[in-house]
Image 1 (tube, rainbow, N blue to C red):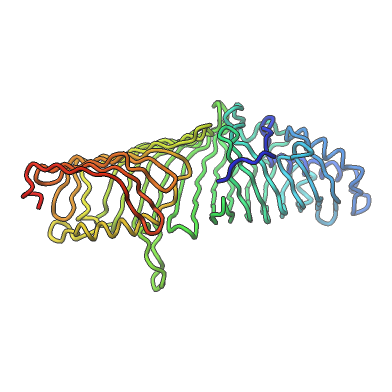
Image 2: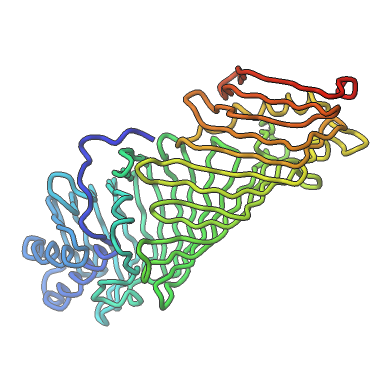
Length: 442
């Protein structure tokens, strides 16, 4: 995440749909075909440049200009190709493409259908402001089309070496996606379809896969999304429904699951502590916030994991922050990391496991708070009661605002201080211990 650059200060005027650019291109091919089918195989683009720019601008709702070379070949297979296309303001467009090429089937064009065989977009650059989504009433994915999207199919769209700036003018920051290479396929522009892409988001490489169902009568879209990164042994999967029409802003609601990834059998790669982590629950995502409820988090071997419940909220506004609460009746560390009551894990071994895990945790991208409450924690064959931890982010990691627990022997422990996550992890702060029966504690 980077501070928002001074050069990107314009908010988008209304929403646009990139697919409408492809529709305008197909519509232009239909018009050219009927006027020049008996003419030369190669059509002079100059005669149709203004027509395309006008029609595409009308579809998208933003100015469209073609500054580079372009041509249209009608036979034997219609091909539309052009370079240097811009959508939006001339000085700072919302979308730029270095080269665009589309090959479509001939026979369907004669019936007013557009069946794209192969489409390539080279080095596209996108600029988008998340604040605009929360300020504009949502439109359905089929709104404003003058050609039935059911009559448009996309066998294969390749995106090569793309980039995007996803800004949030409310908070003065932006995210940068680079090295975007992907494939899009769609039975029609109302679905179903799929997207697969490799990209780097603020320097973190990741793989994204999206499956889209058919657009419903209420303009809702079923979607499942999976995300993984070679830097973290975790996979994230979302399954839900995106709502557009009839809501103040787009909304994506459903279930989310996070699972640790273990090294493959026979691999020399060391097993990460994150490989034993898993989480699942419900979520709701809007341009302003993401909330999750009744989430279950587990850590440890599948047959005896440590399980807790969680809920929380992450706000994306001018003061982006998160607030997460984790609770459990009992956290059995002996069962999760040891052999249960007969073979409890030592406190030293549990501490060593925690120290190993801390450097692998990513730094929180926003300020926020984390709360943990457990009625009991079983560790080292003993039970700690009324365990509570309140954490807040700081520049080096976390600030332990309060850690309290009741140990055997009517012993109460309170700690506060700074927890540094860098290698090696360290804690510096203050503590107090009060014991009613010190002999029982020993």
